[in-house]
Image 1 (cartoon, one colour):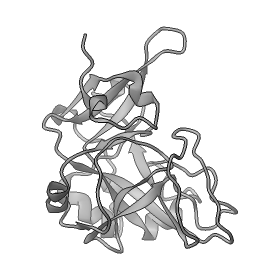
Image 2 (cartoon, one colour; image 1 turned 90 degrees about the vertical axis):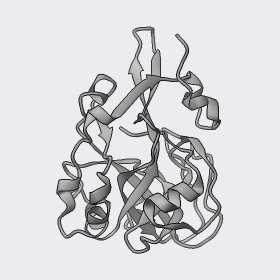
Image 3 (cartoon, helix red, strand yellow; image 1 turned 180 degrees about the vertical axis):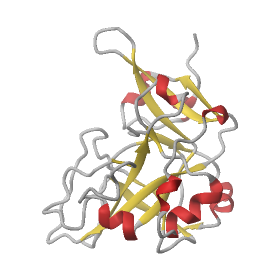
Length: 233
């Protein structure tokens, strides 16, 4: 699962890295959570970074509740909720780290870890996006994140999901799934390729690090730089 992530690199660096410009203002995120409006780059506007709601709502859904925050790479081209988006609506989800939680042995206890490159450089997670046409203005909350932000108009609802795959050796010590981190040279292939399934492999572990962080990240309403600091032993 990928249920929280970070994106706090400078806007200019992000725009240069992805050769795309922000449509709206950018604010650093230290605890990006489901239900929030977050930066993505879609296949139909690869030169623009725009904000979509995390939690994919299929275009055929009766309402916008219960958005899907993750899609499994192994079945993303078959599942009804994702099949059409896989064929026609792929996206890049910029990030510079993501969180996973590990059982501690204490009753109900879990320790959050942040996974990132050694130099905290930004990367793209593979994603899908959808457009849902509401009959009336509606809002939905995701069980994982609490949906602290909502859409503010009556137009189509645009949402996204993050694709997950088998973990590499590093992440396997934390969780049985990990977000698909795309090789930089394959990002455009993911957006526009006819058969991009080969892009959805686990990223090699040797360039990544994982370190424990404060349990303050458990609250999706908490979004501050201290969340990414290594936990003092």
